[in-house]
Length: 78
Image 1 (cartoon, rainbow, N blue to C red):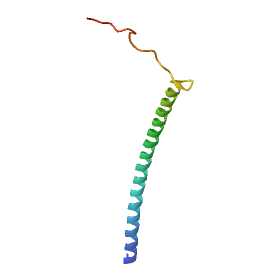
Image 2 (image 1 turned 90 degrees about the vertical axis):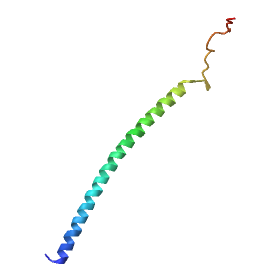
Image 3 (image 1 turned 90 degrees about the horizontal axis):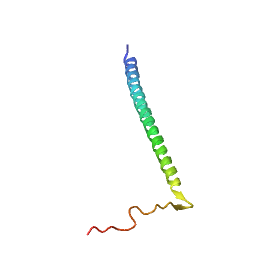
Image 4 (image 1 turned 45 degrees about the vertical axis):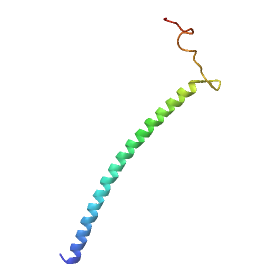
């Protein structure tokens, strides 16, 4: 094996190592992307539920009012 072949072998080995590292990084990024997509979908579903509840709480363009809570007259315990 001459010097040129040795250099080519070293270069191939370096490129294979770099390729393995890039594949590993790509797999990690794909997993992270899947997690982020799932989180985005979960947040989107939650926002849709919040909007649906908000729409139900509005009647004729005005928020529904609830009657006063508690007794209408105050009791005096003197």
